[in-house]
Image: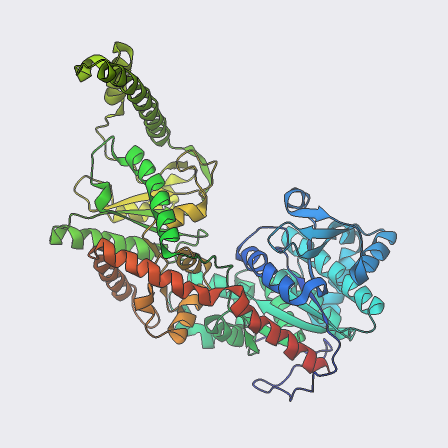
Length: 619
């Protein structure tokens, strides 16, 4: 492996597995914490959820000593950022940088907790970009391409972060500063700060290694081959050498190196050549209810709204009993194999067979929610949605007309012929709606017209597994290649409401450093399936051996074939379809209670330990 020379970079890391004895903290002045990420006020992926949901807990502990730093992106800043008057040390630094011609914005992030935030317009660094790139190459052996927009942007941002932190330390002579960097997009600042002997403490967290994602997507034996990869050769093969070198330099340059799960910790040790010091699991702000029936009522209300979609999508072709229907879902970024979408679809096909053979009267509607390039919503889906609105309009009008005329007849002492209470106009409109409603073809399996229909892996596997939504199928599928939002004409509800209305979340990931989707599921009182290759699944297994009784099933995928895992998952899903309504309610109660462990007020304590360890290591 082509190794980065830590000595050349001015980096001296602590030997693996060695933790120095901690000095007393009795007289330590409370430090400042600066948390730096590309997704501060800038939603790109899962790290945005980590930072946004963690903010109230961090603000509660650190108060005005907590500051977030991110890139200034005008579109997102316009809705997520509120400028405020300059104050404190950070205000002095912002004023000085502005005086030097650098556009820097200071204010509050408009999320719960309203933490202080500084946004750096990294574009101001473009004029010095070649100089910064030269320093990365000469001092840290990190060559960077000239035409990669994201790499250029992140290097410019990292340089501006470096300048900001240097000025912070110059203005703050009394209190120590802890700088916590997230992911390779901010990582270039870490080795640069270490080389110039910046007096603060640094923590670097990788939420998933750059190289690991590529290898897992392209190697079915990823976990078995992990100890034997030539990381630098593989990085060059996948054209991510610059990102890999930045990530590796940050891992070796930080006083404390961390990741989100023991699954990713193994990956870091082999691909980045440093053992992690601390595991930092991800959490959420878990909303607990004073009474159990509150979240059960929310489940019922959200389920009724999903029923409306089901009626519009399926009932023009045939009917089934909604009271005996279960809603399963899987969602997440479109990483067909990494997210376990392939295993989910195969298991649904096997579940369909098992239910047919058993003569089950239950219907399973399985939603696959992700984002793909689409032209528009499918015309048939829009027509069904429009016809459903027409039925609501007509039935409401008839109900009002019948009610008024029936009341008038009753108070007059007459029992009218009910057929005479509805006017000809509304009856004719109702008959027309019924005729237009009927459809001979089975319901579609995808709600949108995809840009590349023929090469979509999810759609092709649904076809190959013959999940066609025929009337005799006990498992129906709805592939929805767009996120669910209140403005979505098919659902018209928040994603959280959609999840709460479902019965089971299915996330059998092959590569998942943590896995927010099953955590979001249980936080909303919905049982979930995860896998032992997901950080969340591994954490659950260690935390609670009886997790299945708590509504979380961890599917074994490590050292097992695809066929074995698919068969296991299909039988687990089949077992769930056989549960009574009372058993499902009991399971929702258990998972809702269990979810409290993942509140940031509990998991945030590990972050505080990481920051204390970094301070100890810089003395």
